[in-house]
Length: 257
Image (cartoon, rainbow, N blue to C red; front, side, top):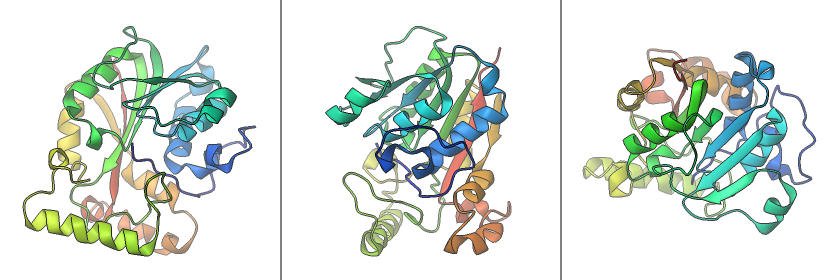
């Protein structure tokens, strides 16, 4: 699955993670923001704590979240992308499985991290139904996905296992996206990395979650609070333009108690 691996400095504590920088919470903006939001919601008052990483990819975000939140973490993906070394050195319980057919009992997890995964899933609505099922009453689901109305793609993307974050590759991504738009093929089910509009994602989430807090502007400010992009963040996150200026959209949902 596609992951977001920004080098933004997290305001969270520096947890004693793996020696590899890839497993550091500060190397994963989405994971760091997820942890920050949970802590603001009173996460530290929950014990014991359990988290599901739905679509874990190579597993580095899962390892970072486990260490930062001091929780029991299960991580699943449709294929096994996790190295033997990470499996041996992390307490995360990695497994192969579909987010549309999870092998967990009802009401198992206190929080779920579903970050830049839903756009890759064959049946997004089924995945949300399953995630709602395994989430405990009062639990949180954090979801992020590319904004289908975005003007530009891959702006904040960083190195991934099968993709290098070079200017040339980012330019190619944008050319491909605009070609797909002009030919009517800018849809996830047609192989494009399109994502969803806020309206589309909200309609799917509303079936299961009455409480949905949209955090796109907060996340972008968190991720780009320093560096060259910081100066344009106030404009890019303004509510009147963020629907197309935001490269991705983010939301925290809570299951009814």
